[in-house]
Picture 1 (spheres, helix red, strand yellow):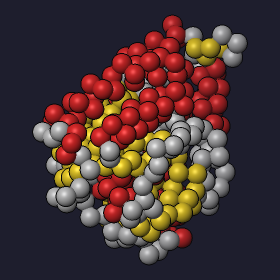
Picture 2: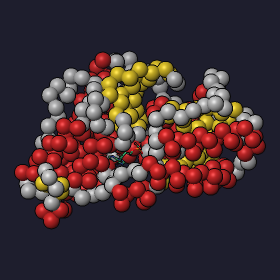
Picture 3: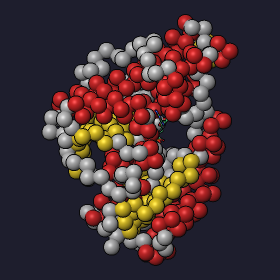
Picture 4: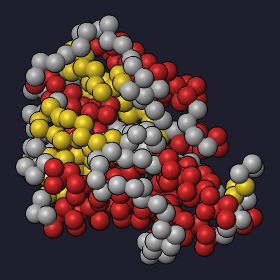
Length: 347
Ligand code: KG4
């Protein structure tokens, strides 16, 4: 019987989960989000993040064990994120996991957080495991990365497209900040866009050739939104947003136009990926941006129309979490891929 404890602390969530790989069932998944601590600064402050992880890590791990109704002695392996992320934050999770492994004589498994996102598509809403077919295309979009993978198996995948500058989540967050929504902005942009029925008011540029390459670029989009707001007298290039001129109508219209633009870009990339990799049996959409229902619905319908399966996990598995760390840890344990206690962190 293999029970895996997963620990994740790469950025601004302290998370722990317990996964039973024999029953293929997630037994618990606990997350403490630090958003409240960072939002007044408009982004994640690394020192605050690592201090908060330190305060919470033992409580969150204990809560995950309690919820799973299991003691540490009954855990077989400990899977922990050791890259990439904020070094101070990663160190808290890794040192905690190593101490547990040493004290309780358990094997430890270092996990690349971005790889864990790829396989988060296997986590189903009822905490059981989805049988996602291989090979498949995975679009992973979060605050720090936007990548398309061709996934052949666990641990066997190729990067077939990625952003050459900003991530999609970053574009949402930066525009959200400019129009006064604060941090993080993706969910607020979606709420505002819904009010105006997801119309494309301003037709922001999709960049030349966006249907011909699997790579992304989002930094020009943010600049285009900014210059459009300058024209509307809502942004000053020296002093930033002119909040008294940013009405809620303008916020909704900018949000909606931005969301439709990013959804169009994602749709074009998925259509091209399926053309280039016709043997892909499914498309998965993961990472924090995959919490966006509008984008999910758009991708779902084009992928289904092409006769393939579309899978996007529920939001609690898209955003940073330890369930995906424990799940990938279980696959690695099956392949005997364990780490040593000199495992280090990498940003
Ligand atoms: O994967 P994730 O939880 O964590 C990190 O990247 O650290 O992704 C966070 C990103 C943020 O940029 C946030 O604005 C975005 O996911 N996000 C969304 C939505 N919910 C979160 N973007 C668009 N629509 C949403 N509903």
